[in-house]
Image 1 (tube, rainbow, N blue to C red):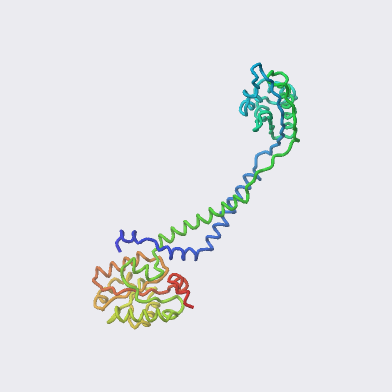
Image 2 (tube, rainbow, N blue to C red):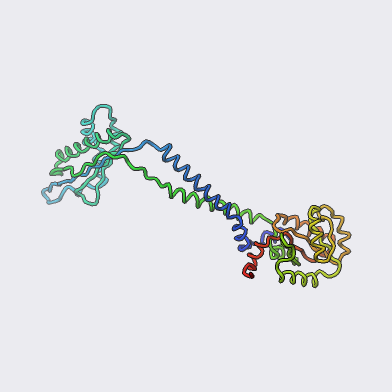
Length: 347
């Protein structure tokens, strides 16, 4: 078969699926391994070597705005972004620092406080987060006093009052362990499937006669199984006899690829009433004898990655002007064969 024809052979999706199902154990192991690796890494990263735990305290304030001479309320100038900037501004931050004991860094306090405004413009919320419970509590109380002081000092407000002040609590870890395990398992399964599919694509084995006939253009005269040889399915035995009667008449020689196959191939040749030879790849001088025969029947071992070796044997026979009658496929997996052709329904 020419290289271009080989590349254009296409993939037999049914055969590929059946071959993948035979590797289901590897797929399951890939999923388990992917889940263990992903989940294990996630747990080590977020539990064993997790960053220092954080403590959080939340305060909520109610604002009474003043009304100017035009009847406008000052809330028109305050929104969520404004309040976060105001909370970090020097008037509030400096007052907060004055209420804290020595040892507190101004930049740390600024970064620890987050101020936001929910949908109601009269409500603001401050959230204080640090790695120390006492620091969180101290900054929370100082921030509350600073915002109340800010409300007293600024003319836009009639007053600001604290309506909720939470206790300092440890921030709960937001772990997604189960999700990571599942995603890791899926990734592992997909990775193994991709590897197996590439393996099938690169595999030049012949599992069923349709593959051989499509790839090389010669008929398969019969199929011998791993157990039972030609026996096992009566209609296939009849088909083989008809093929040999019509195509394999006269003196045919059954040719293996290698000498190590000669004993098994000789037995197969005897069952179909023909002689066999030594391995042609090791004994190309046999071509002189094969030219005198009425035809050559290739003995092809099923499930072996020998596609290019078959190419080479066919090329040699054609160069030597030996007539190729077809092939006998032996050591075929009966279960795979029955499933591929749906003979498994014939029970």
